[in-house]
Every structure is written in C-alpha cells, then in structure tokens.
Image 1 (spheres, chains in turn red, blue, cyan):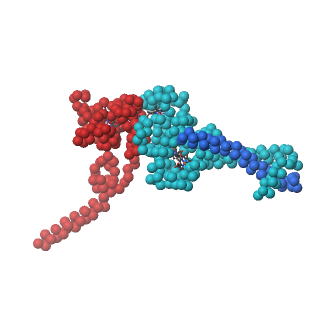
Image 2 (tube, each protein chain N blue to C red):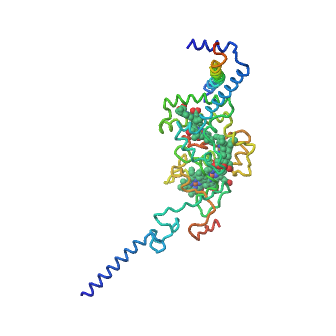
Image 3 (tube, rainbow over the protein chains, first blue to last red):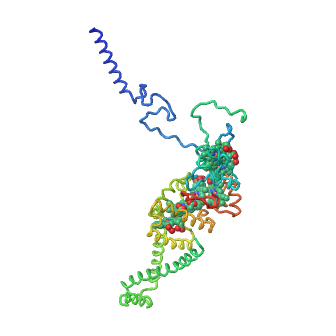
Length: 159
Length: 44
Length: 191
C-alpha cells in the first residue's frame, strides 16, 4: 500500500512538473509548444500574440479583356481596376456604367436580368437590393501564387 | 449657379478689383506721406 | 476723422520738397510691399489648412483619393480644383466666397446631418460651374493634348478619344466624385 501511494505521489509530482514545463514553453515555437498549436494558416506560422508584417498590396490589372468563366452561372470576374468606386446609399459607381440605361454609352456589359429578381423570382423595376452591392459576388483578380492547392477543373462545357 | 447669380457675382467681383487698387494706393500713399513727414516735409 | 482726411488730401495734392527719386522709391517699394502682402493673403486663403477650418469632413475624405496620394507624389489641393487660375476669375471666385462666410455664420453645413442634406445642392453648383468653364481646373493639370492613349486603360481610351475629344462632354460629366463622396445621385444625368 505504502509503495502504491509513493508511486502515485511521484507520478503526480512528475505530471505537475511536466505541466509546469509546458506552460513555460508556450510561446517558444522552437520547443514545439506554441500559441498557434503548430497550425499554419493564411497568416503563416505566426504566434497569436505577434502581429505579422503585412504583405505587399497585390497589383490589379488596370484594364483587360473579360475573363473566361470557369463554371456556368459564375458571377463574371471584374476585368478592370475599381479603386475609388463608391457604392453607398447615395451612389453606385458600377451602375453608372453597367446599368441597362448607361451600359451602351459606357461600352460596358449590361447587368443581366437576374440582377432585377428577388429571392422569390419576382422581377423588380430596378436593381434588386440583394444585387446592389456588386462586390459581394464580383471580384477583381491579380496574378499571385495560389494560397491553397486545389485541383479544380472547369466544367466540360466550358473547357 | 443661376445666370442672375452669376451676373451678380461678376459685377461685384469686377468692382472689387479697382477697389483693391484704390485702397492699395491709399494705404501706400498714407505710409509714404508718414515717412515723408519725418523728413523734409515736416512743416508741410 | 474728417480733419484727418483733409490733412491727407492736402499733403497728397501739394508738391513735396523731397527729391523725386525718394518719392518714386517710396512709391515703388510701397507698391511691391502691397502687392506682396496681397498675394500672400490670396495664397493663405488657398491652403488646405484654411479650407479645413470649415470643411473638415471633406478634408478627411480627400485623404483616401488619388489626388492626395499617388505613385508620382503630385498632389492636388482644394484650391487646385476649386479656385480658378486666371487672376480676374480668381478674384471673382474669392469675392463670391464671401457668401460662404455668411453661410458659415448661418451654419448651413455645420453638422453632419445638415451637410448631408445640403450636399446635393452644393455638388450641383460645383458641377454646373465646371461644366460652364469646360473643367478648366482639371485641365490645368490634365491636358488632353498630352494624354498618351497607349498608357491609358481601354475604358479610358474609348471614352477619351470619342466623347471627350469631340467636346461633347467635359471631365466632370464622367468623373463625378473624383475626390469626394457623392451626394444622392438619383436623377443626376448619367447615374
């Protein structure tokens, strides 16, 4: 019995000491114990309490021909720069070129009729509120390394 | 800006230019006379 | 007061005993000093610091735009776009700005709400002004004759070589909100 208690106590002390040890090591990536759990994310292997240096801004092509779609019903990618384009309750700069009314003068692609529909499929007389904030679905592109490897392939009909 | 307003501001604006010159002249003349009054024109 | 004016006139109209050179010299230096002071005043009321006294929210907006910071480091300040260069036009605009003093005293745009309300009206006045002078302020820096279309984007070239080149439209017709947030654009042509 005595032996057993000693062993139990000993393991307890060792476990405690070990725990203590781990605590000390937290924040020291070399030792394996770290505040990010060794997980690399888009921030890289950065400790939680460290602010990573910001990446350089990506360059967006000024103007190019439209991108080819990768799947059917894809919101087309924006083939031009959009810096400073205001989208607010007051004004929607995109629609000053892409609306049915202005597209011809601006030489831009008309928004499609789907932009006038509500969730229930009812067609409204003006752009639907759920399609007002263009950048929810349409985004610009820049030439950069892929963040996450993937083997996405275009649908057959677009290949 | 309405045409009327534009005409109004142009009249005032163009009137301001001679006014600037005249008042500028008066200010410089006053200064010059004061300096002269320290010198040869003391009794004038 | 009347006495003083009389004395002034008497001195002014009677010949001086000073040498002609001294008189001319006094007039000459006086003229330079006056003109220098006048222009310093004009410059001082053209600075951003001066405008920001009353237009602080707008000054903050401009900070995010291309005319505040860009790759070439050339800045356009408030007066570059809002005050004409030719001397007579500049004086007229400056005199007209005395109206802004009155509006300031009345507090037409002294709160965010009031400014928001009045913004459409003010922007319209500015568009109208630039339409009438064919966007002269923009052209002081951006000269159409020296635009290199091979360097511009496709969209720019298409518009600049047609509607702009023919004189059918002027800069502010297409470039509204180039350095400010826009007012409610309902009913504005082209929006």
